[in-house]
Image 1 (cartoon, one colour):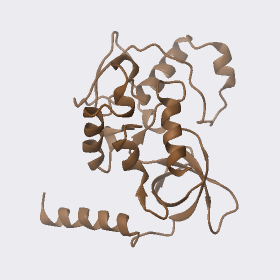
Image 2 (cartoon, one colour):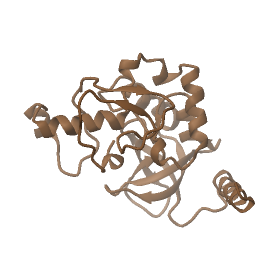
Image 3 (tube, rainbow, N blue to C red):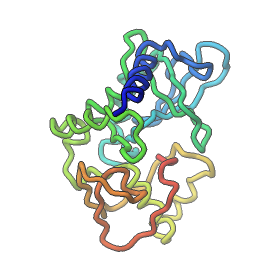
Image 4 (cartoon, rainbow, N blue to C red):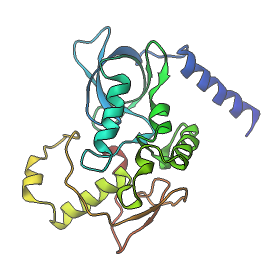
Length: 232
């Protein structure tokens, strides 16, 4: 890597650790409701009278109805529930949520790295910004921590789980009662169980939109959509 790129990367890391490069979008606040292992509400300490909906960058937690979904949420609750945090805002997503990185206060614990290190979430490898997360995930898998202690047929990446839900919905195989519960624009929803139809092989890289850096074997041709990244 060119020296200039190395210096820029080092500078970005230093900004994150020290908070010296915070911009006017960033804020401190208190964590309120936690939806799952990667999204929650934060009440800013200053300048706002309502909670802000945030989603952690680079990771994807199991859905509520997936194996380990409740455990992933409980891990995040134990880590930052009702705690003060510093929120580094990266961007807004299609639902109006803030995509963020978060430090717990006052110990400055990096929440995303801790979740990955302890095996509570998947790294979304297709668009990962912090590549150090990949090594942390590999270490968690080798040590069989968190989701990596599950059997292979239970370890379906959440983006694949949601994709199969959409495919089944399009095919008309999702129960009508489940569809009636879904509200337009609502992304904090329970997800009906979906049969495990994929084999996921850690470490392999594929180019498909549904892959996100994991090899996938699908028993029949499927239509790959391009809007997987925005949903949980």
